[in-house]
Structure formats: structure tokens, C-alpha cells
Image 1 (cartoon, rainbow, N blue to C red):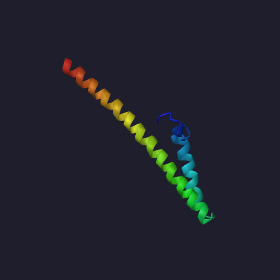
Image 2: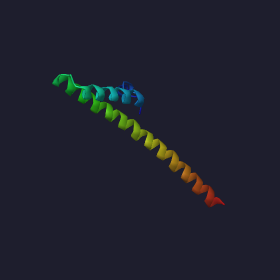
Image 3: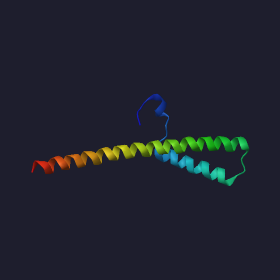
Image 4: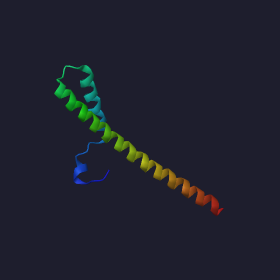
Length: 80
């Protein structure tokens, strides 16, 4: 994730995940008004999106490292 002003307010993966867990617990427990439930649902959707973006970014970084490692190995073996 970049450091643009809009993304500086984006929580870490761990913080988003923890808050999402709390949102789900609150919704499952019931006892909230319809309006509160809708707000929690919307917050949960946003938190799930944030988590997915973090995971996608991590996957991209890992793939780049793996591809770079494989490319280096292929180049090394072809030089022998």
C-alpha cells in the first residue's frame, strides 16, 4: 500500500482483522437497532475489503520475490 494521504488512515491488516472480528461478534450477538446493524455491516464490508487488499498486496510481493528467485536460478543454471 502506498503512503498517499487517503491511505495513511488505512488500518494495518491486523488492526482491520481484529476490528472485523468485533463487528461480526456484535452483529451475531444481536441487540442492535436496524440502523446500528446496517452501519456495522457496512463497516465490516469495508474492513473485509481492507484485509483483502493487504492480502492481495502480500501475494503480489511474494510472487515477485518467487519469480525473481526462479529467474535467477534459471539464469544461473543456463550459465553452467
